Image 1 (tube, helix red, strand yellow):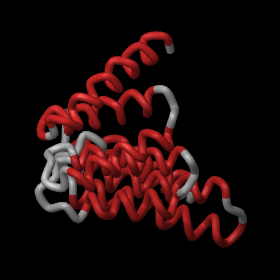
Image 2 (cartoon, rainbow, N blue to C red):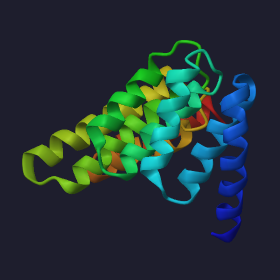
Image 3 (cartoon, rainbow, N blue to C red):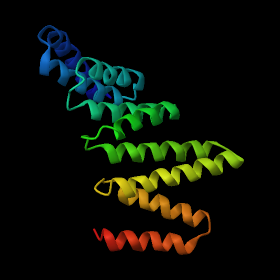
Image 4 (cartoon, rainbow, N blue to C red):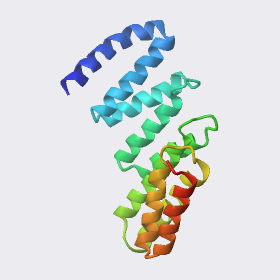
Length: 179
């Protein structure tokens, strides 16, 4: 905590000068501040930095990182609908390398919503979470989250007592992605 406070102090000092100079230094300052705020669990401030980066530097290479972080902040705050909207925006950014991460974030939101729901709503949300995890597997096979998504899919089948499909799911992935 002490080191984060020190880093925050340094970044805030740099930010004053960066505002005067603008450009890359200001952009980098926003990125560093959002990372520090996020690690300090100051989620509202992290979200504000992400939004400021997007507003002032819409063509920044960090915008997709900012969106992913902003979605994570919303998910942590249990504002699932907002998180899903942010993650969806990132999934729709055709050039982003983080699209699979965002799709996984959508699935996590539905899974968490299901855990907090009851009855028929819970079942519907579990089904939706499964479909979203399946999209990670189907649409973003290069994502580092494929293994986790498949594990979630197999667990879904397991909970449904569809053991054959759970095993098939794992075997298919192992055959296609031996690593």
